[in-house]
Image 1 (spheres, rainbow, N blue to C red):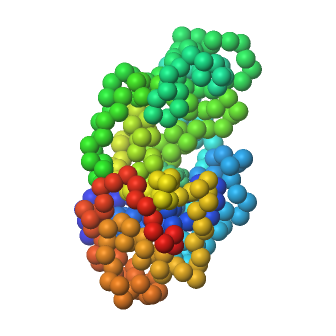
Image 2 (tube, rainbow, N blue to C red):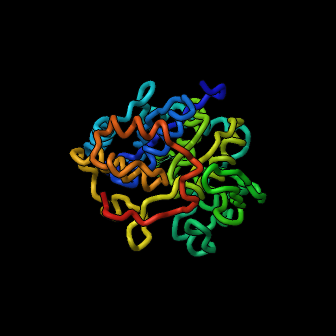
Length: 302
Ligand code: GLU
């Protein structure tokens, strides 16, 4: 037994069924947790109903089971955790760390320059609402300083949020909680010690660290795996028409996910059952072998 407690998680959004790209993240986070004798939690990130696909949650959970994953504890659903997000917002409000913002997308576009994720918020409402409007968002006031962290796969990361993103939204004008807020509150509330996920979220991590600091939470350790892309370099996702995993092909898909993560399972296991593959994988998993890249073209499209 390791003496360091490890609790990881897999946090799919039910916007579509599990595909090869999401399987890679599930496999990597699962094996990291299990190789540390840790727990692996599943959290359904159903925060944004208009983007969700009916039946996706059940489909994802069934595919995980078919692939032989076993999660610890109960499955959490973000849609049922609004009270936790609201009380974190209240705390930030009391501490003067967030402010209401009534800017429209167009107003921001007209007065901002582009950053690493759309327009950098120019701070228009920092010192008071720019306009009297019924609906407004809440933004975190960010410092003009670098946030630095060491990622177990991608190495040292550095980002100045003020320069690259600007004050960012925690609750949208339509009343929905932003991913950044929900993920930080949930990881802390669930006692997650290690976050292992796709590198498409590497640029979000400094925002999550800033928010952890604002809320007085401790910072989990991070590992960001390369994401599976198509030949055009786009992340496999519902938007890029990634094919859902075929449960009848679970063994080959797992074998390919291990291969993608730099773990060379023997070719004779290519047609093995998931339980046989897991025995090999749990024994041989080595994070140091995961390619230190942000994206890799997934060949074969399993
Ligand atoms: N729900 C996010 C996704 O499906 C993952 C969030 C996370 O792992 O922090 O891309």
